[in-house]
Image (cartoon, rainbow, N blue to C red; front, side, top):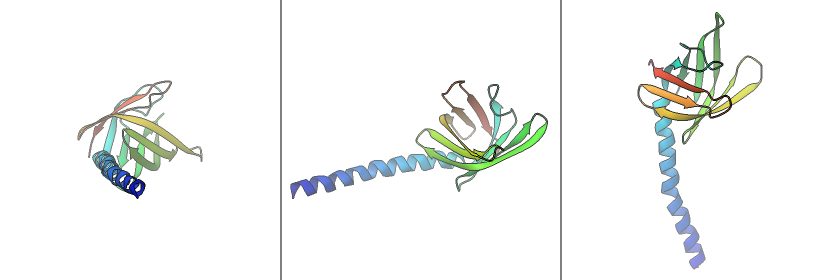
Length: 128
């Protein structure tokens, strides 16, 4: 009987922690919703002036010009803690997934880092 009480108590203790983590993810996702413009990016990263529109339903659309041609990449995204996962088709017909770390997220600025090789830190400003 004591073992059952311990298991139930352990489950109840875990609930507030999980709920708090979910609230934190929702807070970041809510803050992310809107249109962001690339203001700084490394070579091989997204072009300056490109925009990413994140919606509440977990979809996004990146658009801009690359090599004088317009592009649009629709996709989906999730936020888990400080990680932003993007899934999209970059024109190859195969889904590409990219996971970046959210280094900074405020009402006006978003900074992401792929923490890979080569390292790509991208800075965005909110436009809407």
